[in-house]
Length: 569
Image (tube, rainbow, N blue to C red; front, top):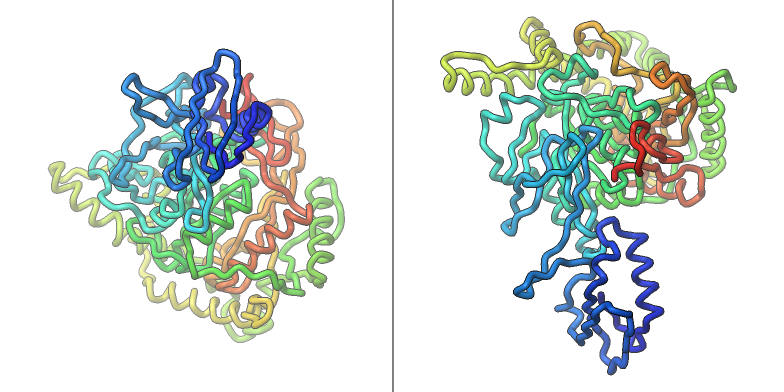
């Protein structure tokens, strides 16, 4: 414990202990058997503590050499060791838990606890102080298992891949930037296989899909950043997770779990040492319950590629929003949110239909939903087969007498579609470019004052979006089509999920009324990520939206249904 107060007293000590108990989940009263008080002030300290049978050792030290605050274990030889608390990953969100090494690499955590799940270790929050150079100091971070982390294996959601290739010798740039900013990696988190979209449960053959903690606990977690979404939604001890978004893989889990999540403007951080799906579409995004941590992590990862700005557009475009209340609770919630947002911005909100806007501006061209119908599946299939599948198949066959490794049905179906299509990557990119050029000049255009000419909002999730994981589904299909969620994919503009509340539904699992998150996606002109991050923080400050909570609901938190004790304990 450190202080620069020469008059440090028992009352102050008790206040510090109370604050520590509230702020930290590793510290507990047992660590008070011995107290080492560091005085970092310049004046003489006459502090005297009488704390019953607790031993107190006081010393005057230079602040630069002070031991970080927090709990420690002391060996018989006098060595100090930081304690880490073990939590059970009851939602199955992690693929492997990690512990850091002195050389900057990582190893698999060699420990476990009761719970039929991996144990995840977290350090005390008290030992870290956020600074300008370390804005994420002590922030607990989970990493989607398509990013390389030095010393750890990468699975890409595939057992054969995990066991075939050795540990990574380099950490992905996006991950390293978060670590350099002070974040603590606590584990790698499950991804649907090769970051292709999969539905629980049958699509997930190699690994079991994580559980969505919201509502009845048996809704789809969405994919492909399934582990990052489920873990961030469930565990108060986890602060932020890193996912990837090619066609919706950060946004879908953020919507399903009621989290703040972003697909950034394309190209904000180089995706070195990350498994590709389609480089023309791949992005690194973050999922968090707290927009202040979310924004700080984004600034650390994207560096100067985002600029925080608080000058906001005066025009809001609404895609497929309700115009009046209905039997769905979410409709009234959405209407109220638009009213409050419009009032806060002093903006006009108008209905927007992208297919009609395209047809008006491009009367002699192919309808937009037809132009882009096959663009996404073609790009992900043809790019991933040549960048991932083909070299892997060749290496695996050479080592295994010509055998092929197992692949889940979803990526296999998509790869097969690409193999059998005569269309080319160049043709798909040309269609994407045609749409992007129009959208980025005619819909969400750059603006010198507000960065983006308008904000475009569409509905992310409501109580009507129940998707039970215990249903038998049809085999995986090819992801044809064009919708609001694909706009950012093809335009390269930012798309950010913002939770605005919750709404009730009747669960066929619990035979009880439960609640699910209601979310809205915010879009702005390409490169205006910082403006949207700033707006979200301002909306929290105004009380228009709130920080999400961990547990059964994103608004109230609460115990995950089958647990009798506190969430995540």
